[in-house]
Image (cartoon, rainbow, N blue to C red; front, side, top):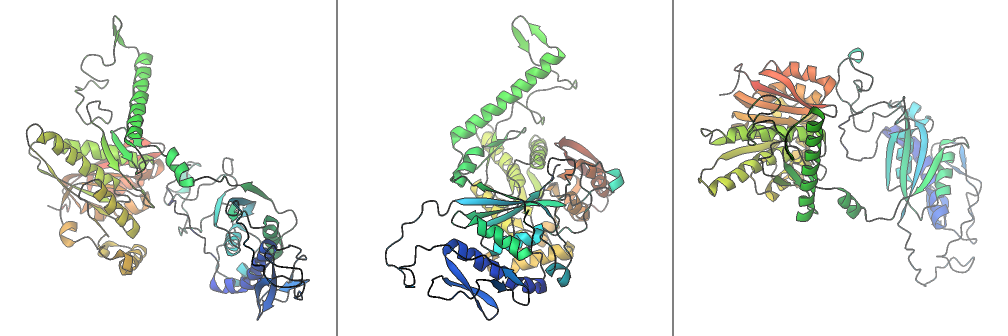
Length: 551
Protein backbone atom coordinates (compact mmCIF):
# COMPACT_ATOMS: atom_id res chain seq x y z
CA UNK A 1 0.00 0.00 0.00
CA UNK A 2 1.56 3.34 -1.00
CA UNK A 3 2.18 5.48 2.03
CA UNK A 4 3.95 8.71 2.66
CA UNK A 5 4.37 8.81 6.41
CA UNK A 6 6.90 10.84 8.27
CA UNK A 7 9.78 8.45 8.74
CA UNK A 8 10.95 10.06 11.92
CA UNK A 9 11.27 7.44 14.71
CA UNK A 10 9.91 8.51 18.07
CA UNK A 11 8.83 7.12 21.40
CA UNK A 12 5.12 6.56 21.77
CA UNK A 13 3.83 8.59 24.73
CA UNK A 14 0.34 7.25 25.15
CA UNK A 15 -0.11 6.89 28.92
CA UNK A 16 -1.65 9.72 30.88
CA UNK A 17 0.18 11.18 33.88
CA UNK A 18 -2.06 9.41 36.35
CA UNK A 19 -1.58 6.06 34.64
CA UNK A 20 2.17 6.54 34.62
CA UNK A 21 2.15 7.03 38.37
CA UNK A 22 0.16 3.86 38.87
CA UNK A 23 2.56 1.93 36.66
CA UNK A 24 5.68 3.55 38.11
CA UNK A 25 6.30 1.17 40.97
CA UNK A 26 5.71 -1.84 38.76
CA UNK A 27 8.10 -0.62 36.08
CA UNK A 28 10.72 0.49 38.62
CA UNK A 29 10.68 -2.93 40.21
CA UNK A 30 11.10 -4.56 36.82
CA UNK A 31 14.04 -2.27 36.06
CA UNK A 32 15.65 -3.39 39.30
CA UNK A 33 15.19 -7.04 38.34
CA UNK A 34 16.80 -6.54 34.93
CA UNK A 35 19.71 -4.65 36.48
CA UNK A 36 20.15 -7.37 39.07
CA UNK A 37 20.16 -10.16 36.53
CA UNK A 38 22.47 -8.32 34.16
CA UNK A 39 24.95 -6.57 36.42
CA UNK A 40 24.73 -8.45 39.70
CA UNK A 41 22.74 -5.85 41.64
CA UNK A 42 20.18 -6.61 44.32
CA UNK A 43 16.91 -4.62 44.35
CA UNK A 44 16.16 -3.04 47.70
CA UNK A 45 12.98 -1.05 48.47
CA UNK A 46 13.31 2.49 49.72
CA UNK A 47 10.34 4.69 50.49
CA UNK A 48 8.09 2.81 48.15
CA UNK A 49 10.60 2.62 45.30
CA UNK A 50 13.19 0.12 44.23
CA UNK A 51 16.87 0.96 44.10
CA UNK A 52 19.91 -1.14 43.30
CA UNK A 53 23.11 -1.93 45.15
CA UNK A 54 25.82 -4.57 44.61
CA UNK A 55 24.60 -7.93 45.83
CA UNK A 56 26.62 -9.70 48.50
CA UNK A 57 25.87 -12.55 50.91
CA UNK A 58 26.77 -10.17 53.76
CA UNK A 59 23.74 -8.03 52.87
CA UNK A 60 20.37 -9.56 53.75
CA UNK A 61 18.02 -9.93 50.81
CA UNK A 62 14.91 -8.00 51.61
CA UNK A 63 13.14 -9.06 48.47
CA UNK A 64 13.87 -12.76 48.07
CA UNK A 65 10.18 -13.52 47.91
CA UNK A 66 8.46 -10.53 46.44
CA UNK A 67 8.55 -6.87 45.55
CA UNK A 68 5.49 -4.77 46.20
CA UNK A 69 4.72 -2.10 43.67
CA UNK A 70 4.16 1.47 44.73
CA UNK A 71 0.45 2.06 45.29
CA UNK A 72 -0.36 -1.66 45.12
CA UNK A 73 -0.82 -4.45 47.66
CA UNK A 74 -0.14 -7.17 45.10
CA UNK A 75 3.40 -8.53 45.07
CA UNK A 76 5.33 -9.26 41.89
CA UNK A 77 7.13 -12.54 42.32
CA UNK A 78 10.86 -12.51 41.62
CA UNK A 79 13.00 -15.65 41.31
CA UNK A 80 16.16 -15.91 43.43
CA UNK A 81 19.05 -13.84 42.11
CA UNK A 82 21.96 -16.16 41.48
CA UNK A 83 24.02 -14.06 39.09
CA UNK A 84 27.65 -13.82 40.12
CA UNK A 85 29.41 -10.51 39.68
CA UNK A 86 33.03 -10.27 38.69
CA UNK A 87 33.31 -6.76 40.10
CA UNK A 88 33.04 -7.99 43.70
CA UNK A 89 35.96 -9.31 45.71
CA UNK A 90 35.98 -12.36 47.94
CA UNK A 91 32.58 -13.73 48.90
CA UNK A 92 31.10 -11.78 51.77
CA UNK A 93 33.71 -9.07 51.77
CA UNK A 94 31.59 -6.53 49.95
CA UNK A 95 34.77 -4.82 48.70
CA UNK A 96 35.58 -4.08 45.11
CA UNK A 97 38.83 -5.29 43.61
CA UNK A 98 41.20 -2.75 42.11
CA UNK A 99 42.04 -4.93 39.11
CA UNK A 100 40.99 -3.40 35.82
CA UNK A 101 38.37 -5.51 34.14
CA UNK A 102 39.05 -5.93 30.44
CA UNK A 103 36.33 -4.51 28.25
CA UNK A 104 34.27 -7.09 26.44
CA UNK A 105 34.53 -6.27 22.71
CA UNK A 106 30.96 -7.53 22.22
CA UNK A 107 29.52 -5.50 25.11
CA UNK A 108 27.92 -2.96 22.80
CA UNK A 109 26.73 -5.22 20.05
CA UNK A 110 22.95 -5.39 19.91
CA UNK A 111 20.27 -8.01 20.24
CA UNK A 112 16.76 -7.53 18.92
CA UNK A 113 13.87 -8.90 20.95
CA UNK A 114 10.60 -8.99 19.02
CA UNK A 115 7.29 -9.61 20.78
CA UNK A 116 4.82 -11.00 18.27
CA UNK A 117 1.14 -10.44 17.59
CA UNK A 118 0.24 -7.96 20.33
CA UNK A 119 -3.02 -6.02 20.39
CA UNK A 120 -2.58 -2.34 19.63
CA UNK A 121 -4.10 -1.37 22.98
CA UNK A 122 -6.49 1.38 23.92
CA UNK A 123 -5.84 5.03 23.23
CA UNK A 124 -8.38 6.21 25.81
CA UNK A 125 -7.24 8.49 28.59
CA UNK A 126 -9.21 6.95 31.43
CA UNK A 127 -6.58 6.21 34.06
CA UNK A 128 -8.27 3.17 35.55
CA UNK A 129 -8.69 1.48 32.17
CA UNK A 130 -5.06 2.12 31.29
CA UNK A 131 -3.73 1.02 34.66
CA UNK A 132 -5.55 -2.30 34.39
CA UNK A 133 -4.91 -2.81 30.69
CA UNK A 134 -3.46 -6.08 29.56
CA UNK A 135 -0.15 -6.30 27.76
CA UNK A 136 -0.45 -4.41 24.50
CA UNK A 137 1.85 -2.79 21.96
CA UNK A 138 1.56 0.75 23.31
CA UNK A 139 2.25 -0.05 26.95
CA UNK A 140 4.99 -2.57 26.13
CA UNK A 141 6.88 -0.03 23.98
CA UNK A 142 6.96 2.38 26.94
CA UNK A 143 8.01 -0.37 29.31
CA UNK A 144 10.89 -1.57 27.15
CA UNK A 145 12.27 1.95 26.88
CA UNK A 146 12.09 2.26 30.67
CA UNK A 147 14.09 -0.93 31.24
CA UNK A 148 16.93 0.19 28.97
CA UNK A 149 16.10 -0.46 25.31
CA UNK A 150 18.16 1.57 22.86
CA UNK A 151 15.17 1.83 20.55
CA UNK A 152 11.68 0.41 20.12
CA UNK A 153 9.71 0.05 16.90
CA UNK A 154 6.31 -1.31 15.93
CA UNK A 155 5.38 -3.09 12.73
CA UNK A 156 2.22 -4.66 11.37
CA UNK A 157 1.90 -8.32 12.36
CA UNK A 158 -0.41 -8.86 9.41
CA UNK A 159 1.85 -7.25 6.80
CA UNK A 160 1.71 -9.16 3.53
CA UNK A 161 -1.50 -10.97 4.45
CA UNK A 162 -5.16 -10.39 3.63
CA UNK A 163 -5.56 -8.72 7.03
CA UNK A 164 -2.99 -6.00 6.34
CA UNK A 165 -4.43 -2.53 6.95
CA UNK A 166 -2.99 0.82 5.86
CA UNK A 167 -3.15 3.45 8.61
CA UNK A 168 -1.07 6.40 7.42
CA UNK A 169 -3.28 7.74 4.61
CA UNK A 170 -4.45 10.98 6.18
CA UNK A 171 -7.15 11.72 3.60
CA UNK A 172 -9.26 9.73 1.19
CA UNK A 173 -12.69 9.49 -0.30
CA UNK A 174 -15.59 7.96 1.56
CA UNK A 175 -15.13 4.23 2.32
CA UNK A 176 -17.72 3.12 -0.21
CA UNK A 177 -15.87 4.94 -3.00
CA UNK A 178 -12.40 3.65 -2.19
CA UNK A 179 -10.88 0.37 -3.22
CA UNK A 180 -9.94 -1.85 -0.28
CA UNK A 181 -6.23 -1.41 -0.88
CA UNK A 182 -6.43 2.27 0.09
CA UNK A 183 -6.56 3.45 3.65
CA UNK A 184 -9.75 4.84 5.14
CA UNK A 185 -9.94 8.19 6.91
CA UNK A 186 -8.64 7.92 10.47
CA UNK A 187 -10.01 10.59 12.83
CA UNK A 188 -6.98 10.61 15.14
CA UNK A 189 -3.95 11.71 13.14
CA UNK A 190 -1.54 12.18 16.05
CA UNK A 191 1.80 10.47 15.37
CA UNK A 192 2.20 7.27 17.32
CA UNK A 193 -1.48 6.77 18.07
CA UNK A 194 -2.67 5.13 14.87
CA UNK A 195 -1.62 1.51 15.18
CA UNK A 196 -2.43 -1.70 13.40
CA UNK A 197 -4.84 -4.18 14.93
CA UNK A 198 -1.97 -6.53 15.74
CA UNK A 199 1.60 -5.33 16.17
CA UNK A 200 5.07 -6.78 16.49
CA UNK A 201 7.13 -4.76 18.97
CA UNK A 202 10.90 -4.92 18.44
CA UNK A 203 13.43 -3.57 20.92
CA UNK A 204 17.20 -3.30 20.63
CA UNK A 205 19.24 -4.05 23.75
CA UNK A 206 23.01 -4.16 24.25
CA UNK A 207 24.13 -7.78 24.29
CA UNK A 208 25.33 -7.28 27.87
CA UNK A 209 21.68 -7.23 28.97
CA UNK A 210 20.26 -10.52 30.16
CA UNK A 211 17.49 -11.44 27.72
CA UNK A 212 15.85 -13.95 30.05
CA UNK A 213 15.48 -11.28 32.73
CA UNK A 214 13.86 -8.89 30.30
CA UNK A 215 11.35 -11.53 29.24
CA UNK A 216 10.67 -12.44 32.87
CA UNK A 217 10.23 -8.77 33.77
CA UNK A 218 7.59 -8.43 31.05
CA UNK A 219 5.78 -11.52 32.30
CA UNK A 220 5.83 -10.47 35.96
CA UNK A 221 4.97 -6.82 35.37
CA UNK A 222 2.01 -7.50 33.12
CA UNK A 223 1.00 -10.87 34.63
CA UNK A 224 1.13 -12.48 31.20
CA UNK A 225 0.71 -16.20 30.66
CA UNK A 226 3.68 -18.44 29.99
CA UNK A 227 3.05 -18.64 26.25
CA UNK A 228 4.31 -15.11 25.49
CA UNK A 229 5.45 -15.18 21.85
CA UNK A 230 8.79 -13.59 21.09
CA UNK A 231 12.00 -14.14 19.17
CA UNK A 232 15.59 -12.99 19.65
CA UNK A 233 17.88 -12.01 16.77
CA UNK A 234 21.48 -10.90 16.75
CA UNK A 235 21.97 -7.52 15.10
CA UNK A 236 24.99 -7.63 12.75
CA UNK A 237 27.93 -5.64 14.05
CA UNK A 238 28.31 -3.30 11.08
CA UNK A 239 29.36 0.24 10.45
CA UNK A 240 25.79 1.16 9.67
CA UNK A 241 26.60 4.61 8.34
CA UNK A 242 29.00 3.15 5.79
CA UNK A 243 26.59 0.30 5.06
CA UNK A 244 23.74 2.71 4.25
CA UNK A 245 25.98 4.96 2.19
CA UNK A 246 27.24 2.07 0.07
CA UNK A 247 23.68 0.98 -0.72
CA UNK A 248 22.41 4.54 -1.34
CA UNK A 249 23.42 5.33 -4.90
CA UNK A 250 23.03 8.66 -6.73
CA UNK A 251 19.45 9.14 -7.93
CA UNK A 252 18.84 9.90 -11.61
CA UNK A 253 15.40 11.12 -12.69
CA UNK A 254 13.71 10.95 -16.09
CA UNK A 255 14.24 14.68 -16.48
CA UNK A 256 18.00 14.24 -16.02
CA UNK A 257 18.41 15.56 -12.52
CA UNK A 258 21.17 13.77 -10.60
CA UNK A 259 20.72 13.90 -6.85
CA UNK A 260 24.01 13.20 -5.13
CA UNK A 261 24.95 13.08 -1.47
CA UNK A 262 28.22 14.00 0.26
CA UNK A 263 29.65 10.48 0.11
CA UNK A 264 29.09 10.09 -3.65
CA UNK A 265 32.22 10.35 -5.75
CA UNK A 266 32.28 11.67 -9.31
CA UNK A 267 32.85 8.11 -10.52
CA UNK A 268 29.71 6.94 -8.69
CA UNK A 269 27.68 9.73 -10.28
CA UNK A 270 29.06 8.87 -13.72
CA UNK A 271 28.23 5.21 -13.28
CA UNK A 272 24.67 6.01 -12.15
CA UNK A 273 24.12 8.17 -15.25
CA UNK A 274 25.51 5.45 -17.51
CA UNK A 275 23.21 2.85 -15.94
CA UNK A 276 20.25 5.17 -16.38
CA UNK A 277 21.03 5.72 -20.07
CA UNK A 278 21.53 2.00 -20.58
CA UNK A 279 18.17 1.12 -19.01
CA UNK A 280 16.41 3.85 -20.98
CA UNK A 281 17.91 2.65 -24.25
CA UNK A 282 16.98 -0.97 -23.50
CA UNK A 283 13.40 0.06 -22.76
CA UNK A 284 13.25 2.10 -25.95
CA UNK A 285 14.63 -0.75 -28.07
CA UNK A 286 12.18 -3.18 -26.52
CA UNK A 287 9.28 -0.85 -27.30
CA UNK A 288 10.43 -0.20 -30.86
CA UNK A 289 11.07 -3.86 -31.70
CA UNK A 290 7.76 -4.94 -30.24
CA UNK A 291 5.85 -2.42 -32.38
CA UNK A 292 7.91 -2.84 -35.53
CA UNK A 293 10.64 -0.48 -36.72
CA UNK A 294 12.07 0.84 -39.91
CA UNK A 295 15.33 -0.77 -41.00
CA UNK A 296 17.83 0.53 -43.56
CA UNK A 297 20.22 -2.34 -44.10
CA UNK A 298 21.95 -3.01 -40.77
CA UNK A 299 20.96 0.39 -39.35
CA UNK A 300 17.99 0.62 -37.03
CA UNK A 301 16.14 3.94 -36.99
CA UNK A 302 14.66 4.38 -33.52
CA UNK A 303 12.44 7.22 -34.74
CA UNK A 304 10.48 7.09 -37.99
CA UNK A 305 11.45 10.31 -39.83
CA UNK A 306 11.50 13.40 -37.63
CA UNK A 307 8.24 12.81 -35.80
CA UNK A 308 7.48 10.96 -32.61
CA UNK A 309 4.59 8.58 -32.04
CA UNK A 310 2.19 11.48 -31.39
CA UNK A 311 2.95 12.95 -34.82
CA UNK A 312 4.58 16.03 -33.33
CA UNK A 313 7.92 17.40 -34.38
CA UNK A 314 10.72 16.17 -32.14
CA UNK A 315 14.02 18.01 -32.13
CA UNK A 316 15.58 16.66 -28.93
CA UNK A 317 15.46 20.06 -27.25
CA UNK A 318 11.88 20.31 -26.13
CA UNK A 319 10.29 19.73 -22.76
CA UNK A 320 9.84 15.98 -23.17
CA UNK A 321 11.17 14.48 -19.87
CA UNK A 322 13.13 11.92 -21.88
CA UNK A 323 14.75 14.46 -24.15
CA UNK A 324 18.17 13.22 -25.20
CA UNK A 325 19.37 16.77 -25.86
CA UNK A 326 19.43 17.72 -22.21
CA UNK A 327 22.48 17.89 -20.04
CA UNK A 328 22.45 16.37 -16.58
CA UNK A 329 21.86 18.79 -13.74
CA UNK A 330 23.49 17.80 -10.48
CA UNK A 331 21.97 18.67 -7.10
CA UNK A 332 23.91 18.14 -3.89
CA UNK A 333 21.70 17.14 -0.98
CA UNK A 334 21.98 16.39 2.68
CA UNK A 335 18.45 15.26 3.40
CA UNK A 336 18.67 14.88 7.17
CA UNK A 337 15.17 14.48 8.56
CA UNK A 338 13.57 16.62 5.85
CA UNK A 339 11.47 15.00 3.13
CA UNK A 340 12.77 15.26 -0.41
CA UNK A 341 15.77 13.06 -1.14
CA UNK A 342 14.51 12.13 -4.60
CA UNK A 343 13.60 8.51 -3.98
CA UNK A 344 9.86 8.99 -3.55
CA UNK A 345 7.70 8.95 -6.71
CA UNK A 346 6.12 12.30 -5.78
CA UNK A 347 9.51 14.02 -5.68
CA UNK A 348 10.37 12.63 -9.10
CA UNK A 349 7.01 13.73 -10.52
CA UNK A 350 7.56 17.25 -9.24
CA UNK A 351 11.15 17.39 -10.51
CA UNK A 352 9.96 16.47 -14.00
CA UNK A 353 7.29 19.19 -13.82
CA UNK A 354 9.75 21.81 -12.57
CA UNK A 355 12.17 21.09 -15.40
CA UNK A 356 9.55 21.24 -18.14
CA UNK A 357 8.04 24.53 -16.90
CA UNK A 358 11.32 26.29 -16.22
CA UNK A 359 12.65 25.27 -19.63
CA UNK A 360 9.52 26.71 -21.24
CA UNK A 361 10.31 30.07 -19.68
CA UNK A 362 14.00 29.85 -20.58
CA UNK A 363 13.08 29.32 -24.23
CA UNK A 364 11.05 32.56 -24.33
CA UNK A 365 13.29 35.48 -25.21
CA UNK A 366 10.92 37.99 -23.61
CA UNK A 367 11.19 36.37 -20.17
CA UNK A 368 13.90 37.90 -18.02
CA UNK A 369 13.02 36.60 -14.55
CA UNK A 370 11.35 33.37 -13.47
CA UNK A 371 9.51 33.38 -10.12
CA UNK A 372 8.83 30.07 -8.36
CA UNK A 373 7.53 29.13 -4.91
CA UNK A 374 8.35 25.76 -3.31
CA UNK A 375 5.49 25.32 -0.81
CA UNK A 376 6.33 22.65 1.76
CA UNK A 377 9.97 22.79 0.75
CA UNK A 378 11.32 19.93 2.87
CA UNK A 379 14.94 19.53 1.82
CA UNK A 380 14.45 22.33 -0.72
CA UNK A 381 15.15 20.01 -3.64
CA UNK A 382 12.43 21.40 -5.92
CA UNK A 383 13.31 25.05 -5.54
CA UNK A 384 17.02 24.25 -5.76
CA UNK A 385 16.36 22.25 -8.95
CA UNK A 386 14.68 25.27 -10.57
CA UNK A 387 17.49 27.62 -9.53
CA UNK A 388 20.11 25.13 -10.73
CA UNK A 389 18.51 24.95 -14.17
CA UNK A 390 18.76 28.72 -14.56
CA UNK A 391 22.30 28.72 -13.22
CA UNK A 392 23.43 26.09 -15.73
CA UNK A 393 21.54 27.85 -18.55
CA UNK A 394 23.35 31.09 -17.83
CA UNK A 395 26.68 29.27 -17.72
CA UNK A 396 26.09 27.88 -21.22
CA UNK A 397 24.80 31.16 -22.65
CA UNK A 398 27.77 33.15 -21.38
CA UNK A 399 30.01 31.01 -23.57
CA UNK A 400 27.98 31.91 -26.65
CA UNK A 401 25.71 34.94 -26.76
CA UNK A 402 26.35 36.32 -23.30
CA UNK A 403 22.62 36.50 -22.54
CA UNK A 404 21.33 35.41 -19.15
CA UNK A 405 18.12 34.92 -17.17
CA UNK A 406 17.28 35.48 -13.50
CA UNK A 407 15.24 33.38 -11.10
CA UNK A 408 13.58 34.27 -7.83
CA UNK A 409 12.70 31.20 -5.78
CA UNK A 410 11.97 30.64 -2.11
CA UNK A 411 10.60 27.90 0.11
CA UNK A 412 7.82 27.86 2.70
CA UNK A 413 7.83 25.37 5.59
CA UNK A 414 6.32 24.96 9.07
CA UNK A 415 9.16 22.63 10.15
CA UNK A 416 12.14 24.59 11.51
CA UNK A 417 14.51 21.67 10.93
CA UNK A 418 13.49 21.55 7.28
CA UNK A 419 14.14 25.27 6.92
CA UNK A 420 17.67 24.85 8.28
CA UNK A 421 18.32 21.88 5.97
CA UNK A 422 16.87 23.53 2.85
CA UNK A 423 18.88 26.69 3.41
CA UNK A 424 22.08 24.69 3.84
CA UNK A 425 21.37 22.66 0.71
CA UNK A 426 20.82 25.85 -1.29
CA UNK A 427 24.15 27.20 -0.08
CA UNK A 428 25.91 23.92 -0.96
CA UNK A 429 24.55 24.18 -4.52
CA UNK A 430 25.58 27.80 -4.98
CA UNK A 431 22.03 29.06 -5.50
CA UNK A 432 19.94 31.60 -3.63
CA UNK A 433 16.80 30.17 -2.08
CA UNK A 434 15.63 31.70 1.21
CA UNK A 435 13.15 29.68 3.27
CA UNK A 436 10.43 31.01 5.55
CA UNK A 437 7.60 30.04 7.84
CA UNK A 438 4.18 30.67 6.25
CA UNK A 439 2.16 33.77 7.08
CA UNK A 440 0.60 33.28 10.51
CA UNK A 441 -2.78 34.66 9.51
CA UNK A 442 -3.64 31.70 7.28
CA UNK A 443 -2.62 28.89 9.64
CA UNK A 444 -4.94 26.57 11.52
CA UNK A 445 -4.54 26.14 15.28
CA UNK A 446 -2.19 23.16 15.10
CA UNK A 447 0.13 24.66 12.47
CA UNK A 448 0.14 28.01 14.27
CA UNK A 449 1.20 26.28 17.49
CA UNK A 450 4.07 24.51 15.70
CA UNK A 451 5.36 27.71 14.14
CA UNK A 452 5.08 29.80 17.31
CA UNK A 453 6.96 27.22 19.36
CA UNK A 454 9.68 27.03 16.70
CA UNK A 455 10.10 30.79 16.66
CA UNK A 456 10.61 30.81 20.43
CA UNK A 457 13.48 28.31 20.38
CA UNK A 458 16.93 29.82 20.63
CA UNK A 459 18.42 27.53 18.01
CA UNK A 460 15.95 28.94 15.48
CA UNK A 461 17.19 32.50 15.78
CA UNK A 462 17.31 34.02 12.32
CA UNK A 463 14.31 32.08 11.01
CA UNK A 464 11.33 34.27 10.20
CA UNK A 465 7.86 34.35 8.76
CA UNK A 466 7.57 35.12 5.03
CA UNK A 467 7.83 38.88 4.51
CA UNK A 468 4.71 40.71 3.40
CA UNK A 469 6.37 41.84 0.18
CA UNK A 470 6.94 38.22 -0.87
CA UNK A 471 3.58 36.79 0.18
CA UNK A 472 1.78 39.53 -1.72
CA UNK A 473 3.82 39.17 -4.92
CA UNK A 474 2.69 37.18 -7.92
CA UNK A 475 4.72 34.21 -9.10
CA UNK A 476 4.91 32.23 -12.31
CA UNK A 477 4.92 28.82 -10.66
CA UNK A 478 4.10 27.17 -7.37
CA UNK A 479 5.11 23.58 -6.73
CA UNK A 480 3.77 21.84 -3.61
CA UNK A 481 4.63 18.26 -2.69
CA UNK A 482 2.76 17.76 0.56
CA UNK A 483 -0.32 15.58 1.14
CA UNK A 484 -3.88 15.69 -0.13
CA UNK A 485 -5.50 16.98 3.07
CA UNK A 486 -3.18 19.96 3.60
CA UNK A 487 -3.22 20.76 -0.11
CA UNK A 488 -7.00 21.06 -0.10
CA UNK A 489 -6.89 23.33 2.94
CA UNK A 490 -4.15 25.44 1.31
CA UNK A 491 -5.97 25.99 -1.99
CA UNK A 492 -6.91 29.63 -1.21
CA UNK A 493 -3.41 30.40 0.12
CA UNK A 494 -1.56 28.86 -2.82
CA UNK A 495 -3.89 30.51 -5.33
CA UNK A 496 -2.91 33.94 -3.99
CA UNK A 497 0.75 33.24 -4.72
CA UNK A 498 0.25 32.58 -8.45
CA UNK A 499 -0.28 35.26 -11.08
CA UNK A 500 -3.06 34.95 -13.64
CA UNK A 501 -1.74 32.55 -16.29
CA UNK A 502 0.75 31.07 -13.83
CA UNK A 503 0.86 27.34 -13.15
CA UNK A 504 0.77 24.93 -10.22
CA UNK A 505 2.25 21.45 -9.83
CA UNK A 506 0.83 19.50 -6.89
CA UNK A 507 1.79 16.06 -5.61
CA UNK A 508 1.83 13.94 -2.48
CA UNK A 509 -1.59 12.81 -3.70
CA UNK A 510 -2.76 9.23 -4.02
CA UNK A 511 -4.77 8.37 -7.11
CA UNK A 512 -8.14 7.98 -5.29
CA UNK A 513 -7.63 11.43 -3.73
CA UNK A 514 -7.14 13.26 -7.02
CA UNK A 515 -10.81 14.08 -7.55
CA UNK A 516 -11.11 16.00 -4.27
CA UNK A 517 -7.88 17.93 -4.87
CA UNK A 518 -8.90 18.74 -8.42
CA UNK A 519 -12.26 20.05 -7.21
CA UNK A 520 -10.64 22.26 -4.57
CA UNK A 521 -8.30 23.96 -7.06
CA UNK A 522 -10.76 24.23 -9.95
CA UNK A 523 -12.22 27.28 -8.23
CA UNK A 524 -8.98 29.21 -8.77
CA UNK A 525 -7.33 27.40 -11.69
CA UNK A 526 -8.35 26.31 -15.17
CA UNK A 527 -7.52 23.02 -16.85
CA UNK A 528 -6.90 21.31 -13.49
CA UNK A 529 -6.02 17.71 -14.26
CA UNK A 530 -3.89 14.71 -13.39
CA UNK A 531 -0.88 15.17 -15.64
CA UNK A 532 1.24 12.19 -14.58
CA UNK A 533 1.11 9.15 -12.30
CA UNK A 534 3.80 6.98 -10.73
CA UNK A 535 3.25 3.97 -8.49
CA UNK A 536 -0.16 5.10 -7.25
CA UNK A 537 0.84 8.75 -6.75
CA UNK A 538 -0.31 11.54 -9.07
CA UNK A 539 0.80 15.00 -10.20
CA UNK A 540 -2.00 17.56 -10.58
CA UNK A 541 -1.46 20.70 -12.66
CA UNK A 542 -3.49 23.80 -13.46
CA UNK A 543 -3.34 27.33 -14.91
CA UNK A 544 -4.36 30.28 -12.73
CA UNK A 545 -7.55 31.97 -13.87
CA UNK A 546 -8.30 35.65 -13.41
CA UNK A 547 -10.67 35.18 -10.46
CA UNK A 548 -9.18 37.22 -7.60
CA UNK A 549 -5.73 36.56 -9.01
CA UNK A 550 -2.82 38.75 -7.87
CA UNK A 551 -1.45 41.12 -10.47
